[in-house]
Amino acid sequence: MSKRGFAFFAMIIAVCILLSGCNMTLLSTEELIRPPKLSGENSFLQEAFERTVKSDTVQMKSPIKGDNRSSYVITDIDYDGNDEALVFYSDYSVDEFAHVAVFKNDGKLWKNVSILTGAAEEIYSVSFNDVNGDGKKEILISWTSLNPESASNETLTLVGNRILTLYTFNGAGMTLQKTEHFTEMYVSDFNGDGSEDIFLSTVNISYDSNRTIGRIIQFDENSFVKYDESFSLIGMLDVLSIVSDSVVKEGKKYTRIYVDGILSDAAFVTDVVEFDCKDETVNLPIHINNSETPPTARTNKIYSCDINSDGIIEIPTLQELPYGRRINPDAEEPTQIYLVVWSNISDDDLEFVFKCIYNKAQNYYFIFDEEWIGQITVVYNSNNDLLAFYEVDEDGELGDKLFSIKTFSSAAWNENSYGFERLLATDAYIYGYTLDNSDRISKQDIQNSFVVMS
Image: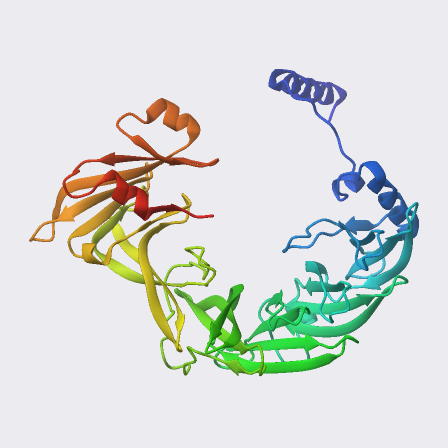
């Protein structure tokens, strides 16, 4: 480029900056791969890390999932009143793996006590759990790989490419106690003994049909495995979510673990593991053969949860709502609306709890009375977030409009809520309603059936 061309190009950039009213800061490549500088007392941790590693090819790494998603994870692991820190990074001049530098604060300075090489290139999650009941936290670091071969074990190919490493911390460093391959993991105290237990799910795609295995692992006071039980679950393509609850039956306590996953290209499913807290045995209340369709199969990605805040997990399935339709901006014809049917496990079977119109995007559901089916239906217009309820006549056509519910932002409510009364308000939305037939439906009926999800 000529000098005149370069000068003209520079002038154009300068004019653009002035017109935009923005400041421009040029960052070096090194600055781009580093997290923001730690502030306050924690800035000394960053300085200690840079003195320890002493490399110009370091790239900071952060866990992908979980509560701890920073490159610098700081907590008091051993409850001695002083913090420890895990610092995650990679150094391509050394190898392709992620690393963790462990630091301890003595009340004045951060001191490096160990540097460990991870089991893969990325950090999936990190958590601190007391799995041996000694009152101190063990460190659970899960690693994941962008290369399927590097994170698969010698004989199996597992969905997720994740590896769990369990470490104990003795003040002078971390000691590896356990390494396991898994697809998804869940940690909780299943039997109420004060120690947290590990549930691992693995989806094995090494066979003609996928095999999903559940596994419960418990540790003794020395961090050695004291219980390790595996069992077959419904075959899934991947595991998406794991939650649990506790119930008492005939005087015995059980922990139930709910595993939500992908059943096929167009279906999702829930399997349930029931763990006897006293006898430490496992029951699978909805166990089926792979050739059967599970009763928890559904076509929408809705996860099991405590939908009604009663302390018990409910499992979602779907039921077609007669004459219900959804108007989509990108579709030529309306699509079918489904009721979400929520059930819980009772005596190895699904027990109905309630049905609802489930609007996850707008964070609410509306309980749909069983007696309404065939007599009342809904039309949801996704163009304006309007949910309208209609009577159904004898010919199956829409009759009189009964009421409608619409979601507004605060600004939209102030500007465009004419004809709507306020139903409920949250930090995110204001929900309004119209009552078009007070002879059939009352304001109290609407309020009783409308629930904002927590």
